[in-house]
Image 1 (cartoon, rainbow, N blue to C red):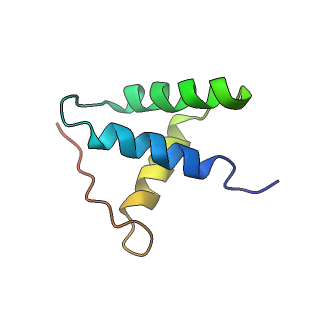
Image 2 (cartoon, rainbow, N blue to C red):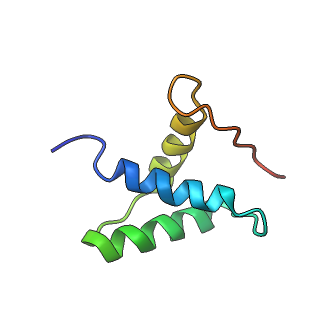
Length: 72
C-alpha cells in the first residue's frame, strides 16, 4: 500500500478551500471538507496531523511552493 494514498485528492480539496477567498477556513473546516470527499469516495477519513502535514508539504519550495498563510 503506498504511503501517499489519496494524497493528490487531499491536495485538490485543500487547494479549492485555499482558493476560496470568500470564506476563511479553520483547521477543523479543512478536516471536515477533506473527510467529506474521502468518505464519499472510499469510506476513509484523515486526522488533523495528516492535514497539517499536507499543508506543510504544499508550502515546501521544492514541491508546490504555495503561499499559504494562517490568519489569527
